Image (cartoon, rainbow, N blue to C red):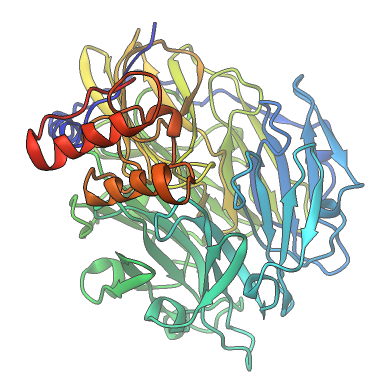
Length: 581
């Protein structure tokens, strides 16, 4: 049985800091040829199209991952495929999101209105306004054209991401603009969500730099509790006379809070020159921080792998096939495809005569290139690689978009290793839980192994992975510990978590230092909480967040007794009130 602990936040941070130092690496034997089957029947793999963007998303909340594909031609609708739960997909043609000739490169999914279902922002690559659709909760969508600047601005859009930039509990949006086609030379854009109306942020280098952006990854790279941004920049008008003439530096912006960012100007992450497209993040060495891979999209350019030092600074890795294997690449993604407890890497090649790459993690920070099997034998205009367990059998399957060719779905047939799939649902944080971190510890091959997944599904070049956190467990028989760090700052610990299950974890609010009296909530119990409680009891009568859990004195109602207990804690005895949970 899974046991949950709701501990004071200061105690949780002490534990979280300690576990990162006690990592272990494990490796189980894998077959030389990974066990995948290419699916050849169904509309999702036979429609053709000028496809770029790919999303795994459960848009109707039935527990099964559906597929959304963006097409770049002006005469093609985007594709929406409903997962029937038996391994087949039905093409949806009647919904607005499947009847838009948007010339769409990318789309971003997230519950921006916090009503419990995933909405979608569809980018357009023809200098028209991008499109926002709200999910009606019944598997249908309605276009929203009154959401402020977000539905007014026009651009030549590439990749987009929903992210709670200011950690206020709702999703903001960052969108990238391609600037190769002059005279259009616009910067990227950032929009603050103000109760469903989006206000464009106009100050700061993060929205004034003109980058020729072609990919991004949001992550808490420096482990300070907010999401930072890496932007991949590229000029792309193939064939290039001399790629060296079109190489750019990439950009890295550190989040300082309240929509303020500092542009980092030193370090290999921002001084290496290339033609960069698909960045992917993942803790490939299981040391508790997010590392970064960058796919570079021109002939004879090597890709980049950067190891995170834990404080947001990076060292570039120069050895191994991952960084010496030169090929023109667009997309990339980390995933533990063999469920052995470490992240492997998949990279897509766009040139017709170049095959995709699969690099198996050796468990010691190095990779071995897999050279046989269906995942690496298909060469023709590959773009986005997205991972998701569409058949709910406990391993990750792979969908790849192709330009002017049928898209590909590869079913993972597994290898007997154990696994855990975690869905996080925010309450104080955004409902999609984008920005949450999930850490687990399990004994794999006799070694204690900590793993980290961050809920940041929009990644690489035009890719939206399944929003769940998937962990491979090898021969582990139980997950000893799980720590969920929510964007709000709230943390939860679970122990003795059963393996081989789809687990949903809901954020428990009001878990401040004293357990349950963070009325504001700001993850501190202070004068602000006293003011909020007084306002509720005597002035506005507006309920504080999580009123049902705010029974400070434990007698069943929120009244003057709770106010007295809080005053006693803050100013007299300093004894924490008795938590009610």
